[in-house]
Length: 372
Image (cartoon, rainbow, N blue to C red; front, top):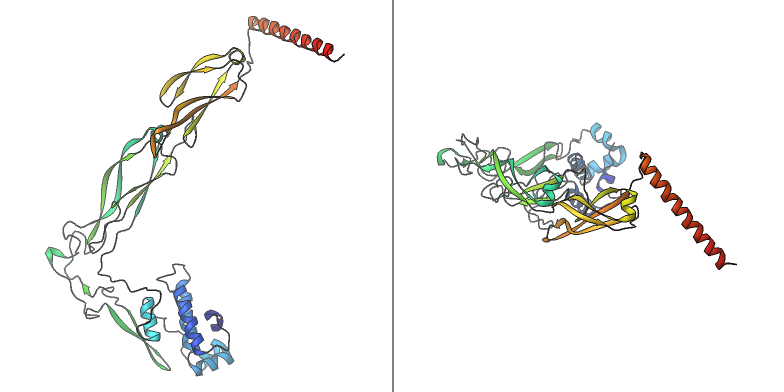
């Protein structure tokens, strides 16, 4: 069974002031309007049960001796004050402690005040080269727009909402829970008008009284040069329309760049691999390669080693904040040993081998002379 003292975070000798203080603290933490965890509602209801029990001397004495089962056997109602729902936090505090109780400046939101629309997110995929160079794309989004027929009022032909008969225009009602000790009354948001104080009796047929409708919209967006995988773009006021004249939310576009089979990107630099022959590595060469700007000739210096690089400055990715500044295209050299050679090539390699062997012998003879 639940331990009411543990729920409130107090010891068993706690005074009523201690109980009130603990309830205020825990209510702020677990009220479902503030805490969106799935278990928040259940925990908040437990807080109400604990507070109601421990603030009543007779119920507390019974609970201390026999627990929650003892309360039920004694005929006490253990459902708690929130068994049938609860209002916002200010309403709860006013019901428990009277009006004028402040808690961090939080006030009940006026449902008739302008409310901003929700932000939206759209993920799109683009090619590697398009991310580097920039591209203009047409996109489609589904979002809520202010209904053009009723201009957001939700009413038909300019009709006005009427006063809610449930709350008489106040936006809130009293809810009473009967217990063996009497009645417990709290103020809750009106379930009929949802706090507005008015209801629409003749709704707009276009938006069914909502004031907004779901619309598919086409937009042309310019993706700047240099964007990378995961880059985000914000289009102001292209999200859902606001309520009661509130501003529309924003549209956030998340870019997913397809990997290239040829280029590897690192910041604003790109890397490619170039296979060359041993002869090209020894003698050097001029080779035509593919770059982001088309084909270009690069010079392979004589004597280049496997894994060394040749850099083409200004041929990489544009800096997204400074498009005139570009990174480097870095060519990584890979020296490939041939696996199939002709007889003529074999003769030449044999001759080269013999020349290198004589050169090594000459070097050895010179070293012997030095270290005699």
